[in-house]
Image (cartoon, rainbow, N blue to C red; front, side, top):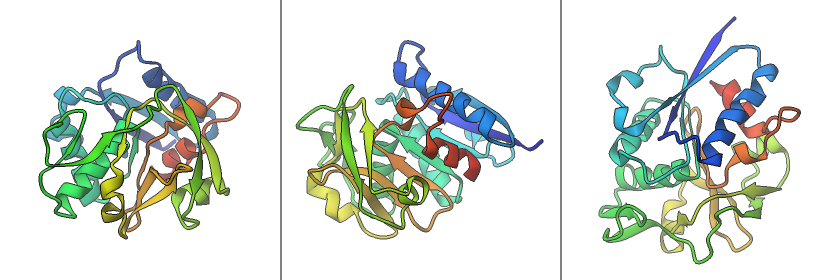
Length: 230
């Protein structure tokens, strides 16, 4: 049987229900895939060059839980995956860091930062929301009908579950939203909630957390599709 190994990049804390939910969501998928499914957490302060090898892992998942112990290691992992056409999924904090990495290294928007970790940066690409989404849920609208979200879910709306207080800064959203890097789903007010790099094999991020909407009887469809892409 083929083996699929996923590297979960994040600082695992069993007290964080979002981390436990991520593990559970992967386990929910196990009976529904025809592969031997393995996953391992890598603390961000323990990341070395050895994880950047295709023969050890088939994908990265940038987990929730920012700020990370080593933010630069997370940015480096995202950049490596983007440049090497390596499958990567980012949820919550992972989504946020994917946005910043692309702004810095591809769009050339200098002096950028994440307000939570770099509050003095000139251009806060990720900023604090006017209304926190910690422990909240909201209706999300999939505007891009050629997106990963639409192809998998086959609908234009979903209820997203969140645990965050930071999102894409509306001041920069239009500047960032340029093909092939596109925001594919939005809140009712038009705030970005999902991203996709169209020219990449699998480079997707969601501000909402799919693991919070998964069960043994019905694994989350997005996570199941991510595994299949691996």
